[in-house]
Image (cartoon, rainbow, N blue to C red; front, side, top):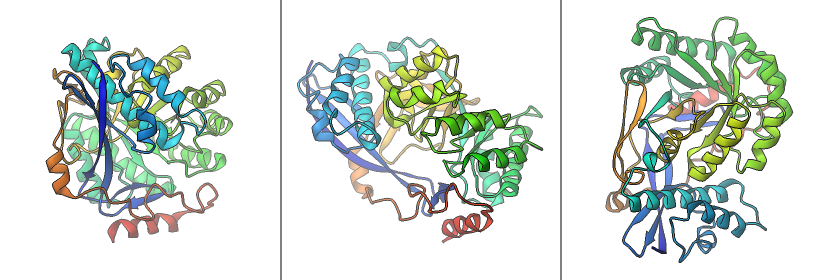
Length: 391
């Protein structure tokens, strides 16, 4: 079997409501989703979700190769970008190709990827994550009631701009999940998306912990601040989770060595091979690993095969436009199917008809605010986020 070509598509995740975090909001709730499809001479096509940046250059490393040599080809792609570097969106393109190759390998074997990787149980524990900072109280409650109906008993809220607002919103969601679980204590997490300084993080979380039991605080300071993450971890009861924006083991090593990570995260778009390597590194330090992303299907398959998976993020319950997946959610778990490969089907006609692919709106969560990390009181910023979400 040989790789013969690739195609790129852009579809969208349509939330039908504002989504975002402390850095900004997409008012229309439309998030672009990039797709790479890799073709072979035996008619098997693999699908990967991730960036398209430098796709032609990266594809040169795998063109004409046997796609079943996935891990070796992953390292060929890393070497292909040696001079320019493989961080950021370039790493995402490598991850998309890598995911597509794993899809091909499992399809060729006639097995779902979770089985090929050595997984025993098709169920993957999930937690709810609504990208919800732009929601009113009523919308927030209604959103997490839907998650609770699917059996989810842990939730991660976006916050970081207002201590009392975060306390109120976390309490609302706690009560929703507690009622659905007939009094059992739910897991509560808060994601600050790198909006704090070290002292802001300890003060903010410490105040919340006076009345709430937080499972983890996510990305409290900048992603590369090993000493800062360690300081936050020492200063609060909650675990510190981070890593979704790190690319390559070389970026994880100093954070783990400094004691800055209690929960190691990897982004869905970084690919299967990267996740497996990060999971092994984390396991060597007795740390759990948790995949992050709106459509983490590939990492759900991989999560079944590692000993230290904690829980995977469940965002929107609907797949992107034109994308069907052989999985469902029940009793708080993702449940993977038996389709060979990843179980992803792409309807290119539906994607083309939707006319997606527009650039993200200005001022969304992809843009870091000027005052991030150096606010004293940020109540006004919360109001600005809310106004953007309502417009």
